[in-house]
Length: 247
Image 1 (cartoon, helix red, strand yellow):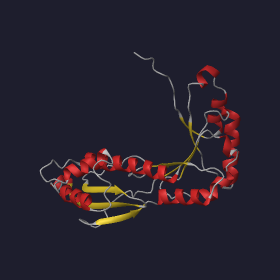
Image 2 (cartoon, helix red, strand yellow):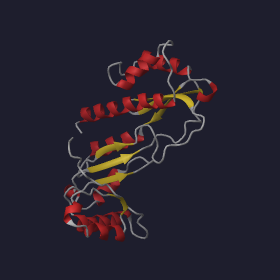
Image 3 (cartoon, rainbow, N blue to C red):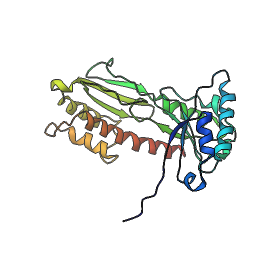
Image 4 (tube, rainbow, N blue to C red):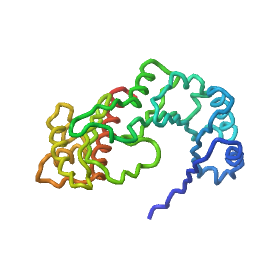
């Protein structure tokens, strides 16, 4: 049996106490730690001053080897052109990542049994910033087809299909799963497979499942399976987008 590599990823606030603890780790144990630090709010400082101060203190506490920077915009579109110029030592970070997740918290307000387009502002805001030039392009990160935060406890989920396209998601809502509406997924899948926006059965395992369930004779699955198919397609789609963009 291969020896398990021991690594620990503590999630810490970027406050003075946590920074002190990191700066005083024994070298042997420090080599096995990959801390993830959440920047605390700026208080009275401007955002630029706050970021610069925290980055400099983290550099002093941890160094810059193996050190990554993640800008997490959470449910908001990225405003990289405003923030990237204020990040000190930008070239010294091992990885520079920007994340955003704008998929709606709830789809309950969408009309039933018709396709709705939801803009992918997370992707669009990243792409726009990169195309217009930054001192360093961040790696793209998103929350796929969920909003940031803990997964919602929907209680009585509705039949739904979500499909990632170039600059938006196509979403269709149906009846309640608990009320026996799951067979409605057959028509949703059939409509998607017949549309020119469908990526094809071989594009991803999720697309393969969508094609399979477009047949009424197949089992419809349930909320977990529907999300699995859509996230599978989303991840493959974003990787292909990034490859085409040269990212």
